[in-house]
Length: 377
Image (cartoon, rainbow, N blue to C red; front, side, top):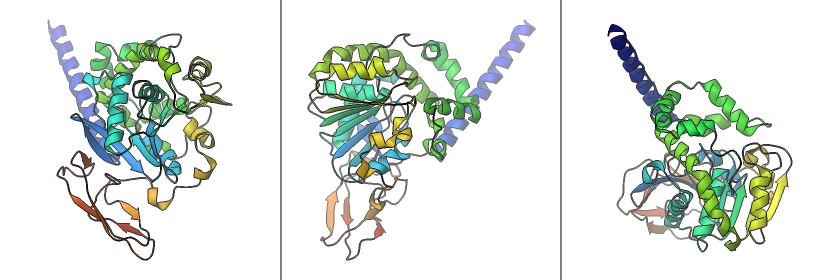
């Protein structure tokens, strides 16, 4: 009996320590890597979006265990010189709420992001998805064919693959995995282990300097995010299989980019098969094995004219005053922001009037009446 009591005390102490460390790590992650842009409300579900630049609407959808910071590190700033770039946290990850208690099918994710894009004024954007985000982009094209103008997949998941779920996600998506293993990982995974995993995803190239600090991998190690990601991975095989018969009906221009020796998402299984299934799709196969082409081979993803450093009017957003590039010669413009779009740094939900003041000389001027970027431009 004493042994059992002692064991129970030890287990309770371990559970308490795990919970405390997990909560501490989550709070630190959110403190050091807060939301970058808008917190939208889509049917009561929060969706986090970053908006930069002007031009044709371009939606960016990140992959597994990611968040929109994967794009705002570099790609969004390079593209926003010619596009209005909208990067989303997928449901359940980053600062976007999960759908259906964390079991967010590809269709449900595409529905949510399509409605979020429309709320930002992007009714028929170009949709680009990376890795698992590529599968969400394909679901967008399949289930909402009239709500996008073009489709781009980068190292995208598109077809069922040999081997199924694998041991790691089999464990994590189980009840013991979600309620025992995940809290332990949130609490005790080391910085060295995190760096090693990111190195493996980028291999054979190293991650760009500063990427880990910008990306905030501990956002992805929060318990709710890990549970949502594990359940999405558990359902991915069947969800993708349901998409495959509908690929021939995709009519929008489709670009497919993939590294020939990608060890994470197989080139032939996914992108070669997708190019054969989608009428008129164009496949660009790149040499090498990196899964992170938008970082290791940006020239393949970014048209040459958008490759220079980002222009000042679409610099990487941050919480606080939004700096706008002002031009001559327009009268002051005022607009009413819809109540459904609110700032990541404000809880104001009532419609408000905002003005953009113009000057005789282009300059970077803070807009004191609007705390976040392009919420309703």
